View 1: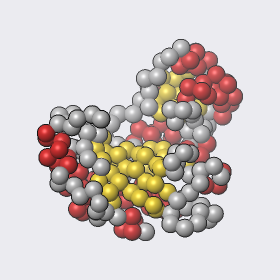
View 2: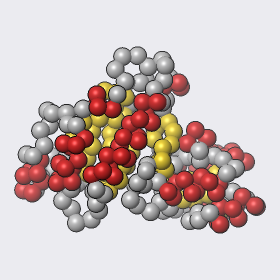
View 3: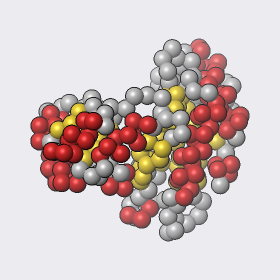
Length: 232
């Protein structure tokens, strides 16, 4: 087991691991425990009472954070012709078709999001499915990343839209909700936006308790449990 530093142990004592906090209590603790010199990412983890093995409970979609994620998102676009030009004008970081497929197949992965026009998907799936799929980067119509409106998709992603997807093995959704440098109000609004989106996405076939657990943490900080009832 990795030995924690003295500073971490001191900060960890400020968090009651058995308590479920309201946001107005948790966010000051979160900022206090984010002690690294770089801007730590704030992560939200939500355990849902769903069975992702059933298609209707495999929750996936996008949500626009009102204050963004606090980081620059590198977007690549698979498109040809007029749609490729549209993507370039919209601010895509890299645009291509077969050349981009070969570049990624060769090991280049310096990007955060992928958008594609529908006509590109067969080529992408056959050659990059095993590369993009496990990394959560495969374009998907439900996430709005397989579209003819490439300009709008790029603008949304650059403005702070994030994708959420329930993990098939655990039933947990992990999403970034800002930086530790954000003020508490900004982080709170981002969290509340995500939670309201997940509640609306509850499938009718999901039985029992839907929000099993909710927690926040910064990259190097301590996990803080949140009271799920405050979001119901």
